[in-house]
Image 1 (cartoon, each protein chain N blue to C red):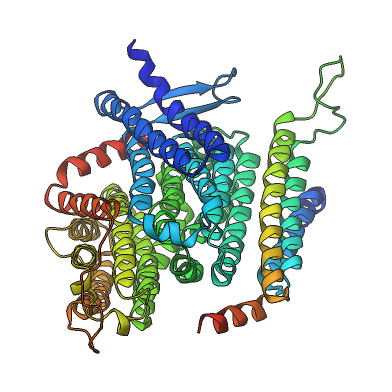
Image 2: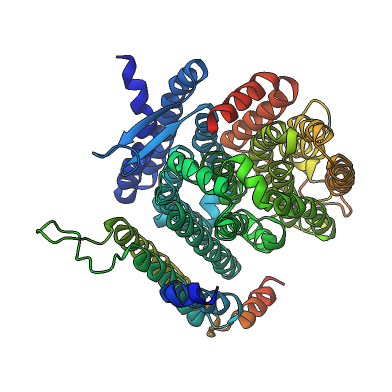
Length: 120
Length: 500
């Protein structure tokens, strides 16, 4: 068991980062930090993918006579994931800007409170 | 010539994308016409595909230049086409029904963006139904998340923006989990194509190794999809989201978007993991328990509410619970239970928009109020909305003759045929039905009571033709499914057979 953790240290790091990002996204009340947490979570997944596709001693998957290449599919997935993550960050930041402009705070608890007051 | 049918599913994905491009530069009127033209054409294209799959089972179609394990493909069976028809027609009906509120809630310059979002959402949900590649499914999950957030936040008031943030947070957590699960599955099997993963997973399960990573991957995907579709512990985003958005958005989000994710989950259970392996991981039991809990907790939440739209939103949480309960029953009755769940997807998708639309009609006839006290007697001020609400409420309660009764009957039949889950399922079903009856019938009686205080304006509210049309069509669907469910049920059963 312990050996597995040692050999797969990249995956272990990825899962730890995923947990950090996840807890930040759930428990932090500051909107910007929530977005940062989301980005950490996504990045952890990219680390997981990239380390999974890496083959020891392999070069970039462009055929030029090298003996081994790394697996290109995870790299492609990472690129796709980055594009998705950028657009999600953009929309979250847009929402944050709109909320800040209206309530002048980034703390989600206060924002809920003010919105509730506004409604009543 | 007959081969062209094989290309129709691709057209139903591409055409809305094209429509979105046109809508983004077109004016208000043109974009509306483009959107409705796109959905009509897509519906028309789906009909021959449905007929073909009914006759010949399923077919696959390679996308791009590489064959299946490396390249991308779509796979079309009866269930997928039925779901696509829903995805194409339901938003159009919702927009018709919520048209007046749409014009009030959204500034004139942004109306065309609403249609852009609708086109993109339609494309994404269609692709979710058709794709045979897990990573493509993930990308379209994200597209439908972003577009549904767009549908939500286009109403620019404070509460809606707050609801949109909350919706996005739950959805992002869900997407993260789904992506992690997909990556783990890819790590285990080396494939992204659904059918190939299934073979590899069967081999892995046969050796008895790697059970923990497999369970973790399946669990992550289920939790992620559960978060996005409002499974019991994660249903807290629903009331705010559905009650503060514009009516059409509420209909689409509750009726279609969450169902798109659940349909993907059913596909993953049957086509990616395989039902037997899934049972072996124990995850269906978790789905079952959360489904049962959702049925009760959602209904209790609805009873406590004093605003009509929040009540309907909580009822959505309960109905999602029904669907998950059906998916989780498992055992010898698994197929009947999943068929019941798919039938309930259709029932709920056709009833909930009717409720939201008619509730908005009722509150418009009462000066825009949403509290029950102000809605008293509103059915007399707006008889069409009152009748439509009554139909929707009776269907959700499970009155014979309406669609909701058939789904409850199917769930009960499946529960009786299951191993050891009959008693718990039947009792929770009974309790939930009683709770449903309490809040829906209470509301229905309330809107037909005479108004508490005499009103100055006693004239009957004038509905638009689009509103009446949407109510009539949705009511007709409800009664049709209730009276004549067998053909649809046969199609669903055939669809589930070919889903694997």
